[in-house]
Length: 267
Image (tube, rainbow, N blue to C red):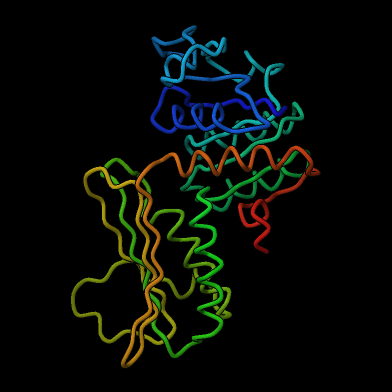
Protein backbone atom coordinates (compact mmCIF):
# COMPACT_ATOMS: atom_id res chain seq x y z
CA UNK A 1 0.00 0.00 0.00
CA UNK A 2 1.57 3.28 -1.13
CA UNK A 3 1.22 6.03 1.46
CA UNK A 4 0.59 9.39 -0.16
CA UNK A 5 1.38 12.82 1.28
CA UNK A 6 -0.52 15.82 -0.06
CA UNK A 7 0.99 19.30 0.31
CA UNK A 8 -1.36 22.27 0.18
CA UNK A 9 -3.96 19.93 1.63
CA UNK A 10 -6.43 22.67 2.59
CA UNK A 11 -6.56 24.21 -0.88
CA UNK A 12 -8.91 23.38 -3.76
CA UNK A 13 -6.47 21.03 -5.43
CA UNK A 14 -5.35 19.54 -2.14
CA UNK A 15 -8.88 18.59 -1.17
CA UNK A 16 -9.40 16.93 -4.55
CA UNK A 17 -6.16 15.00 -4.12
CA UNK A 18 -7.26 13.73 -0.72
CA UNK A 19 -10.60 12.61 -2.14
CA UNK A 20 -8.91 10.93 -5.12
CA UNK A 21 -6.54 9.11 -2.76
CA UNK A 22 -9.42 7.86 -0.64
CA UNK A 23 -11.28 6.67 -3.75
CA UNK A 24 -8.31 4.88 -5.34
CA UNK A 25 -7.16 1.31 -4.72
CA UNK A 26 -3.64 0.44 -3.62
CA UNK A 27 -2.93 3.80 -1.96
CA UNK A 28 -3.82 5.54 1.29
CA UNK A 29 -3.38 9.01 2.73
CA UNK A 30 -0.35 9.00 5.00
CA UNK A 31 0.23 12.72 5.53
CA UNK A 32 -1.20 16.13 4.74
CA UNK A 33 0.74 19.39 4.87
CA UNK A 34 -0.49 22.98 5.06
CA UNK A 35 1.14 26.36 5.59
CA UNK A 36 2.86 26.87 8.96
CA UNK A 37 0.54 29.85 9.45
CA UNK A 38 -2.65 27.90 8.77
CA UNK A 39 -5.41 27.99 11.37
CA UNK A 40 -6.23 24.40 10.40
CA UNK A 41 -3.05 22.83 11.79
CA UNK A 42 -3.94 19.72 13.75
CA UNK A 43 -7.32 19.27 12.06
CA UNK A 44 -8.22 15.95 10.45
CA UNK A 45 -7.34 16.05 6.73
CA UNK A 46 -10.32 13.92 5.76
CA UNK A 47 -12.78 16.19 7.54
CA UNK A 48 -11.26 19.27 5.86
CA UNK A 49 -11.61 17.56 2.47
CA UNK A 50 -15.18 16.47 3.17
CA UNK A 51 -14.51 12.73 2.99
CA UNK A 52 -14.87 11.88 6.68
CA UNK A 53 -12.35 11.40 9.44
CA UNK A 54 -9.14 9.68 8.28
CA UNK A 55 -6.95 9.94 11.36
CA UNK A 56 -4.39 12.06 9.49
CA UNK A 57 -3.72 15.44 11.09
CA UNK A 58 -2.63 18.48 9.11
CA UNK A 59 1.04 19.33 9.79
CA UNK A 60 3.21 22.27 8.81
CA UNK A 61 6.19 20.64 7.06
CA UNK A 62 7.48 17.52 5.37
CA UNK A 63 9.91 17.07 8.25
CA UNK A 64 6.94 16.66 10.59
CA UNK A 65 5.65 13.63 8.69
CA UNK A 66 8.71 12.15 6.98
CA UNK A 67 8.03 8.68 8.43
CA UNK A 68 4.39 8.69 7.34
CA UNK A 69 4.53 8.68 3.53
CA UNK A 70 6.18 7.01 0.53
CA UNK A 71 5.30 9.51 -2.20
CA UNK A 72 4.52 13.23 -2.15
CA UNK A 73 2.04 14.84 -4.54
CA UNK A 74 2.95 18.47 -5.14
CA UNK A 75 0.84 21.07 -6.98
CA UNK A 76 2.33 24.12 -5.24
CA UNK A 77 4.71 26.80 -6.57
CA UNK A 78 7.97 26.42 -8.52
CA UNK A 79 10.34 27.41 -5.71
CA UNK A 80 8.55 25.28 -3.11
CA UNK A 81 8.35 22.33 -5.49
CA UNK A 82 12.11 22.41 -6.09
CA UNK A 83 12.74 22.44 -2.33
CA UNK A 84 10.28 19.58 -1.82
CA UNK A 85 11.92 17.52 -4.57
CA UNK A 86 15.31 17.97 -2.91
CA UNK A 87 13.81 16.89 0.44
CA UNK A 88 12.28 13.79 -1.14
CA UNK A 89 15.55 12.86 -2.83
CA UNK A 90 17.42 13.22 0.46
CA UNK A 91 14.91 11.09 2.38
CA UNK A 92 14.26 8.41 -0.28
CA UNK A 93 10.70 9.52 -1.00
CA UNK A 94 9.11 9.54 -4.45
CA UNK A 95 7.39 12.68 -5.72
CA UNK A 96 4.65 13.45 -8.26
CA UNK A 97 4.76 17.04 -9.50
CA UNK A 98 1.92 18.89 -11.20
CA UNK A 99 3.30 22.38 -10.55
CA UNK A 100 3.55 24.62 -13.62
CA UNK A 101 5.63 27.70 -14.41
CA UNK A 102 9.06 26.21 -13.63
CA UNK A 103 12.00 27.79 -15.46
CA UNK A 104 14.88 25.85 -16.99
CA UNK A 105 17.02 26.05 -13.84
CA UNK A 106 14.19 24.71 -11.70
CA UNK A 107 13.53 21.89 -14.15
CA UNK A 108 17.22 21.04 -14.01
CA UNK A 109 16.90 20.75 -10.21
CA UNK A 110 14.17 18.15 -10.70
CA UNK A 111 16.50 16.19 -12.97
CA UNK A 112 19.10 16.26 -10.20
CA UNK A 113 16.55 14.98 -7.66
CA UNK A 114 15.59 12.18 -10.05
CA UNK A 115 19.12 10.81 -9.85
CA UNK A 116 18.28 9.67 -6.32
CA UNK A 117 14.53 9.05 -6.33
CA UNK A 118 11.48 8.50 -8.52
CA UNK A 119 10.00 11.70 -9.96
CA UNK A 120 6.92 12.10 -12.15
CA UNK A 121 6.78 15.64 -13.54
CA UNK A 122 4.01 16.63 -15.93
CA UNK A 123 2.30 19.96 -16.62
CA UNK A 124 -1.03 18.14 -16.74
CA UNK A 125 -1.93 14.91 -14.94
CA UNK A 126 -5.19 14.34 -16.82
CA UNK A 127 -5.39 11.03 -18.66
CA UNK A 128 -7.38 12.76 -21.40
CA UNK A 129 -4.81 15.52 -21.88
CA UNK A 130 -1.99 13.01 -22.16
CA UNK A 131 -3.91 11.05 -24.76
CA UNK A 132 -4.41 14.39 -26.54
CA UNK A 133 -0.64 14.92 -26.57
CA UNK A 134 -0.26 11.59 -28.36
CA UNK A 135 -2.88 12.62 -30.92
CA UNK A 136 -1.14 15.96 -31.47
CA UNK A 137 2.16 14.26 -32.21
CA UNK A 138 0.50 11.96 -34.72
CA UNK A 139 -1.37 14.83 -36.38
CA UNK A 140 1.76 16.95 -36.71
CA UNK A 141 3.72 14.09 -38.22
CA UNK A 142 1.03 13.46 -40.83
CA UNK A 143 0.12 17.08 -41.65
CA UNK A 144 3.65 18.49 -41.72
CA UNK A 145 4.71 22.04 -42.47
CA UNK A 146 1.82 22.84 -44.82
CA UNK A 147 -0.52 23.40 -41.87
CA UNK A 148 -0.37 26.43 -39.58
CA UNK A 149 -0.43 25.56 -35.87
CA UNK A 150 -2.17 27.66 -33.21
CA UNK A 151 -2.69 26.79 -29.52
CA UNK A 152 -5.59 28.45 -27.69
CA UNK A 153 -6.02 27.94 -23.94
CA UNK A 154 -8.46 29.20 -21.29
CA UNK A 155 -8.28 29.05 -17.49
CA UNK A 156 -9.84 30.66 -14.45
CA UNK A 157 -9.03 34.22 -13.43
CA UNK A 158 -6.74 33.12 -10.58
CA UNK A 159 -4.14 31.27 -12.69
CA UNK A 160 -0.82 33.08 -12.42
CA UNK A 161 1.26 31.64 -15.29
CA UNK A 162 0.64 32.17 -18.99
CA UNK A 163 0.53 30.34 -21.31
CA UNK A 164 -0.44 27.33 -19.25
CA UNK A 165 2.08 24.54 -18.77
CA UNK A 166 -0.24 22.26 -20.70
CA UNK A 167 -0.40 24.65 -23.66
CA UNK A 168 3.37 24.90 -23.72
CA UNK A 169 3.70 21.12 -23.59
CA UNK A 170 1.27 20.82 -26.49
CA UNK A 171 3.40 23.27 -28.43
CA UNK A 172 6.55 21.32 -27.56
CA UNK A 173 5.02 18.04 -28.71
CA UNK A 174 3.97 19.54 -32.05
CA UNK A 175 7.32 21.27 -32.52
CA UNK A 176 9.22 18.05 -31.80
CA UNK A 177 7.12 16.13 -34.31
CA UNK A 178 7.82 18.81 -36.92
CA UNK A 179 11.54 19.00 -36.18
CA UNK A 180 11.35 22.52 -34.74
CA UNK A 181 12.57 24.18 -31.53
CA UNK A 182 9.62 25.77 -29.76
CA UNK A 183 11.84 28.44 -28.21
CA UNK A 184 12.65 29.65 -31.71
CA UNK A 185 9.25 29.35 -33.39
CA UNK A 186 6.73 30.25 -30.64
CA UNK A 187 4.73 33.48 -30.96
CA UNK A 188 2.85 34.60 -27.85
CA UNK A 189 -0.11 36.80 -28.75
CA UNK A 190 -0.31 39.24 -31.65
CA UNK A 191 -1.04 42.94 -31.70
CA UNK A 192 -0.67 45.76 -34.22
CA UNK A 193 0.73 45.69 -37.76
CA UNK A 194 2.78 42.53 -37.42
CA UNK A 195 2.67 41.40 -41.04
CA UNK A 196 1.60 38.01 -42.36
CA UNK A 197 2.11 34.82 -40.42
CA UNK A 198 5.36 32.96 -41.03
CA UNK A 199 5.10 29.35 -42.12
CA UNK A 200 6.79 27.65 -39.21
CA UNK A 201 5.65 29.69 -36.23
CA UNK A 202 3.46 28.13 -33.53
CA UNK A 203 1.08 30.68 -32.05
CA UNK A 204 -0.31 30.85 -28.51
CA UNK A 205 -3.40 32.70 -27.35
CA UNK A 206 -4.46 32.91 -23.69
CA UNK A 207 -7.84 33.52 -22.05
CA UNK A 208 -8.26 34.15 -18.31
CA UNK A 209 -11.86 34.39 -17.14
CA UNK A 210 -14.24 33.30 -14.41
CA UNK A 211 -13.91 29.78 -13.08
CA UNK A 212 -12.77 27.92 -16.22
CA UNK A 213 -10.96 24.79 -15.00
CA UNK A 214 -8.98 24.30 -18.19
CA UNK A 215 -9.61 24.25 -21.94
CA UNK A 216 -7.07 23.69 -24.71
CA UNK A 217 -7.56 23.73 -28.46
CA UNK A 218 -4.85 23.14 -31.06
CA UNK A 219 -5.58 24.22 -34.63
CA UNK A 220 -3.96 22.72 -37.70
CA UNK A 221 -5.12 24.98 -40.55
CA UNK A 222 -4.35 25.26 -44.25
CA UNK A 223 -6.09 26.52 -47.36
CA UNK A 224 -9.51 24.86 -47.46
CA UNK A 225 -9.64 23.06 -44.10
CA UNK A 226 -8.96 23.21 -40.39
CA UNK A 227 -8.51 20.40 -37.89
CA UNK A 228 -9.02 21.11 -34.19
CA UNK A 229 -7.95 18.82 -31.38
CA UNK A 230 -9.67 19.93 -28.19
CA UNK A 231 -9.60 18.98 -24.52
CA UNK A 232 -11.92 20.51 -21.90
CA UNK A 233 -11.69 19.83 -18.17
CA UNK A 234 -14.78 20.49 -16.08
CA UNK A 235 -13.36 19.43 -12.70
CA UNK A 236 -9.99 19.48 -10.94
CA UNK A 237 -10.71 15.89 -9.98
CA UNK A 238 -9.46 14.75 -13.38
CA UNK A 239 -5.99 16.10 -12.51
CA UNK A 240 -6.16 14.64 -8.99
CA UNK A 241 -7.07 11.17 -10.24
CA UNK A 242 -4.19 11.23 -12.71
CA UNK A 243 -1.72 12.31 -10.02
CA UNK A 244 -2.83 9.53 -7.68
CA UNK A 245 -2.54 7.05 -10.56
CA UNK A 246 1.02 8.26 -11.12
CA UNK A 247 1.82 7.89 -7.43
CA UNK A 248 0.65 4.28 -7.42
CA UNK A 249 2.62 3.57 -10.63
CA UNK A 250 5.87 4.75 -9.03
CA UNK A 251 5.82 1.89 -6.54
CA UNK A 252 7.65 -0.46 -8.92
CA UNK A 253 9.88 2.09 -10.66
CA UNK A 254 13.59 2.82 -10.21
CA UNK A 255 14.96 6.30 -9.58
CA UNK A 256 14.46 8.52 -12.60
CA UNK A 257 12.49 11.35 -14.18
CA UNK A 258 9.18 10.27 -15.71
CA UNK A 259 6.09 11.96 -17.13
CA UNK A 260 2.46 10.93 -17.60
CA UNK A 261 3.26 9.46 -20.99
CA UNK A 262 5.40 6.92 -19.11
CA UNK A 263 2.68 6.31 -16.52
CA UNK A 264 0.09 5.63 -19.22
CA UNK A 265 2.49 3.63 -21.44
CA UNK A 266 1.94 6.03 -24.34
CA UNK A 267 5.58 6.24 -25.44
